[in-house]
Image 1: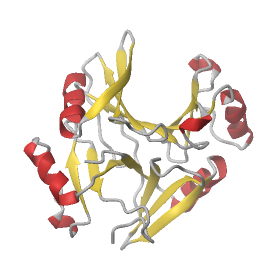
Image 2: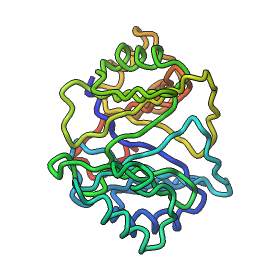
Image 3: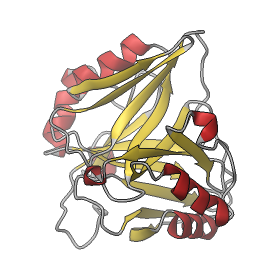
Length: 264
């Protein structure tokens, strides 16, 4: 199983407004688009993104208003080391909502929000670890840290690469073994107070690349992953399982040389 995190999908209320926001402020370009019956899917990413880098998928369903639930955390994007203040100020000058500035975050990171309220963390990374504004990690909240870590290590053979344990919460980062520096990782956030979370429609899914959709799907079933939407029900183009907290995970075979990013 490849295991590379291929993209993160979020839903947006106004497609053109969101496209303009990401293309203007994060300098993303449209990688591909699919127009369906009542919905549109657009893949976005930096112009010079690495082949192991993850894309952002935004989905717009006609007539649907987006609600941001607390099970969904944020995406994080990269800027060069020691340039956090400069890029944050650039966003402020462009009219981006002032949410959590670098000073309030100890000078280590910052947060802004997109038009629907999706949180975007800005983190400092070595330029060799990915293009400017490329996706660094996706954060989701989990209700049981042991179960979440066990799920990702057993089902997808991910490894825990780093952690941060504070007085009231802990962050665990997981990714495939030998992941490229440019690849996106997954951040699992666990709050110690036993709270539960709501999955609203603003949060979509994570997508993982597999080597062979049918064979890897069968392997996941052997490892007792939930059978949510199997390959056959999706014309053998992709499949979906769920993590222990209900977070949806898409599986896809990715031909990086294909004319279209969509397997249709």
